[in-house]
Image 1 (tube, rainbow, N blue to C red):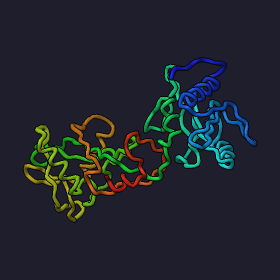
Image 2: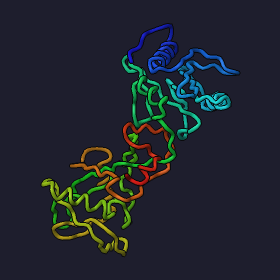
Image 3: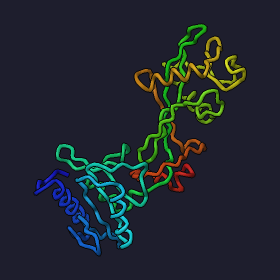
Image 4: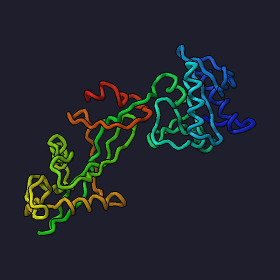
Length: 294
């Protein structure tokens, strides 16, 4: 959506929001006065009133919530487009609040670091209930990263792997990084993950996969599931594996990646992360279909 410059950036955005909503076929009022509030743009869509507020000046979260309560009282859905968002500990269901961007005279709306939508697509999907609040993040993909790991004993080059990101239907990326050590229950050693990774590696001539089994560690005087050299079977201690993984977080070192759809596993990876979910053609994070991995 290209900007048509009017008296101010605020007025320009207000004009664009109103025009887009009219083109979508909705009834629109600008600068609509309610009982004790005034909406930049009021839209009647699907028997529901929506108030779009374009906030180009600073406004605290407390003040925004106070204004939002008036909309809630009058059964109006308030939606806030901030040029500079107020600080929030987490996204709130009672406060649809999004970042408004002007990129080379193109208006876009950002859903945190998950997705950036052209203004017209954001308004269309918000008014058509395609942007919803979810209390959970339900990954649909697991990103696996492969790295080199030289055997400390025989010096053979092995490859090991770790979980990079869990990727949700709305493109949220939850970094895992396999930071646990001396834990046989790590997700990387889950048979459903392990078997898919090893099957992928078997068909990849670049990867010389370390072997995976329970081994005794003199460091902790106990046995745990571990990587070990495919040549001499020496254990790759979790402390050293952990350090090698961390090094790849801040630079090169990942030699290959693969994606495992969560629908191909029965592992429950849901985590409580409140967020405004825009999954596109996929299911919402909190939908039953996602929960059942269908």
